[in-house]
Amino acid sequence: MKPILNIAAYLFVSLDNLPTLRSRMLEECNARELKGTILLTGEGINLFLAGREKEMRGFLDYLRSDLRFQSLAAKESWSEQQPFKKMLIKLKAEIIRMNHPSIRPEEDRANFITPRKLQEWLDRGTDDLGRPVVMLDTRNAFEVEYGTFENALHFNIQKFTEFPEVIRAHKEKLADKTIVSFCTGGIRCEKSGLYMREIGMKHTYQLEGGILKYFEEVGTAHYQGSCFVFDQREALEPNLDSICFEESKRKNIKVS
Image (cartoon, rainbow, N blue to C red; front, side, top):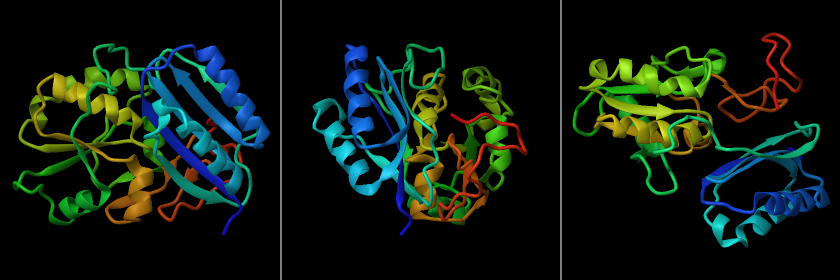
């Protein structure tokens, strides 16, 4: 087994006293020689970390000892080398910026579909009620270039704050379809799924755990290419192996 455990995780949960929380987490990460990025916001936590397995699992145990993080679920992959250069914990206003404060995933969730169930729908081409299934990629345009689901719809957006406007413009065309939104790990779909429901799109789902969970449970079926990740591995193949261990030169993309 490769020696470095990489985890990606998020949780929408109300947090306060963020500077103190940041100091404690940074101390725990540094003591375990973990590297990566943690975002702390009033609406929750988002993290991408890498380190030796024992130390990583110890940190996750530390996090979950706080009742607020008890339900935190991590997606895992392995690498030969440490893909991060340093350990950063940032304080932000939102985990993922959408500029729609009425969308609060901590209080409610959009309908979700598991990777295995999605594969069943895609194999058949319809949902359980016979409606056509449309995969909706909520990621930015450069991420889509690395890979996406076959025949997926995307809007060539440059940042997630553009999503509400473009989905509104396509609402009527998608009215008779079942929409499954997806992103890297599921975090953007927590908000996009709720927003689509708010504007009256009835038959919408989010892919539970995003592309990375789909890779873990299903693999290559109905997916073409790789999945961009925000670290120096650049992108992951469906077997969760990295395709590059350096900052992307081909696309001149800054990763953090």
